[in-house]
Length: 469
Ligand code: GLU
Image (cartoon, rainbow, N blue to C red; front, side, top):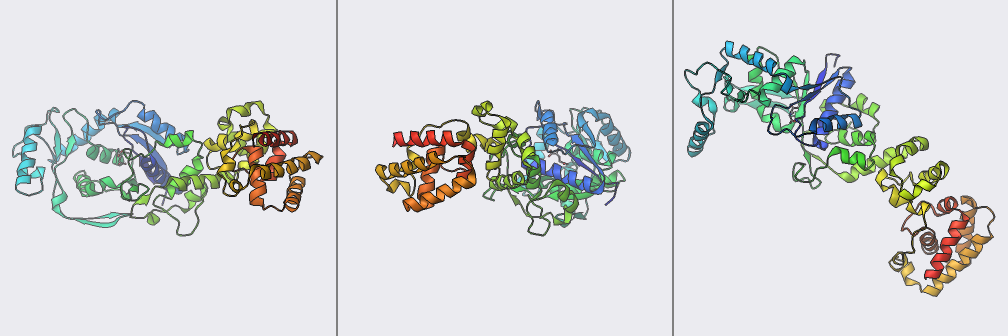
């Protein structure tokens, strides 16, 4: 590939972006970056009825969050009407476009007629013989030249089609706006797009686009059709209706942009090895169109969380500390940076996304009320009666009171000693101490957690648990 690689992301501002649109943007960005080419943002806003306020800003926010910044654009199709008219003029002059004289009702009648005859509806079968000159008030249609095509798609391979898929589609609607079919071809030519990377819904139209390219005397770009993203069950295309989330919701939940990129890249692409965690630089180096799969890719949010956790684990603590600043539980505001850093270093290994922080760390910042269920529903502890549990906690408390200095290694020694004295298994004794000191079902390593909590807090909490037994 060369510097002449130009790719584009061409969303319609009709709502929020979900993983599908974002992945298309990422693939186009990767192809451009890898070749030292240009990544262009084009807002396809010619369908005025479907336009949604704020959607364009949302698209920009998504790209900015993932750092997929366009080298050019945004271009707005609604500001380029003159250009589409010029191209339309070229086609009219060449006898390849004509004014559509029919009312929508008449076209509907043709459609029904074809249906009744069990034939596919083709507009070109009704092409008027002497259409009036186009006055801009009626639709302008492409005069197609039906023929066979073998179209190469970088992902889908060779697509052989016959003349029956070629039809006279609308170029410019009666409201003066071009259709997607026309506008995107014009823009892709004008913007010298080398690779048209987009979803599968446009695959069936490729022969028509080729027909239009020929009418304009231009060469087609390289077509790259990315497979659908399927829902978790794998039985349906992922869609907003089926709960596909706005990409920015993941930002709000504290997912890392690099993990999201890693996740999106793996939706339908792999590098042929077992590698799962990729940095952005690695993706730029390794991404290749010929390893995009043809079949649908499963969307699995647990995989995203897993990848996010993997990226979090690889981060330096001070870098992570800066990123989680907005996610601490409210109670953390009374604690200093040093303490919060210690807490963070303990949960870094298990943190999947930042919004989990309050749940994972709450007990480091306040004494949570004693929760009797943690014992009554505990697999082992529920078999013990209260006096036994009391005794275990009393012994523990006495040992911990004796300690001068509360460091994890010394604590671990003491805890191990307690196993000896009491003859209990860690799954019993350590669970009990964990519950008493944290009121959480799980925590980072017990000794490390206790060191951060400090002797006074641990003893207090053991005392409270004892009172409540
Ligand atoms: N505006 C189209 C869409 O949002 C873009 C298709 C394309 O990339 O050409 O679906």
